[in-house]
Length: 277
Image (cartoon, rainbow, N blue to C red; front, side, top):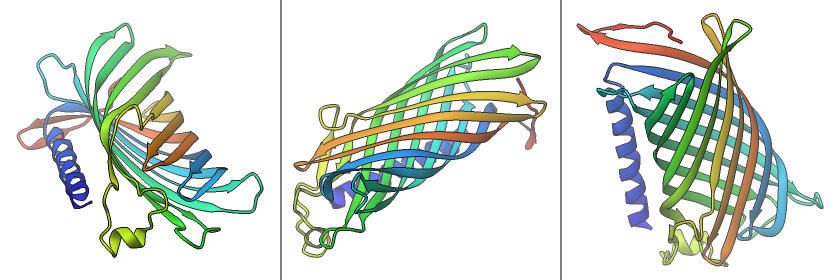
């Protein structure tokens, strides 16, 4: 458990350091802040064998920018998502509330960029933390979620002009390949883990055989003069099989956001900005 927390802190520090370093160079940047909600489906056999369903609200912040390079083909994306959900079983005799925070940082290489089409592919680091609380349980009512992953990410974008209005559509998909996750064994209480120190086999190595997850996002941008509005459809699927138990969670979200496009030029300690398209 201590080794897992140390690894989590190191990876978080590295991601923040890389993110801060990428901000010191001349480059194009795109900032997006989105708010929305949707449907959540949940099965966590540590808390209950029942399938729960309900709604959630979500807040997402994205920063996408071009890195300094001679060919201009390298990009970076910083994505943070925060959402809270409430779910009930089909019988209606229970309730769970939960919250989750996801952070990812991606290095992209753009092999294609012509006639409005752009294609990106890269590697991604993911951090995921949160929890679930079942109001019906008196023993072990909560479940902690912690995980770090190395993922593969692809993204395609098409920019066009319709009715004299600049528009663009984008599709992104992320698949975790290898990582670590915290998950108690079936019947193991958090009292035993944190107070008695019986934390053996609580940290698991994850790969495609026990962590079959997928995150997709489709967005549609419309530019009105200097203002760009984004409409997004996001889907997240998590399927963990760890510690003789299963955790399945899927969310579908409709998001509305505001996009700010900037271009930073560092010259004599002065930053000049303009909105490109």
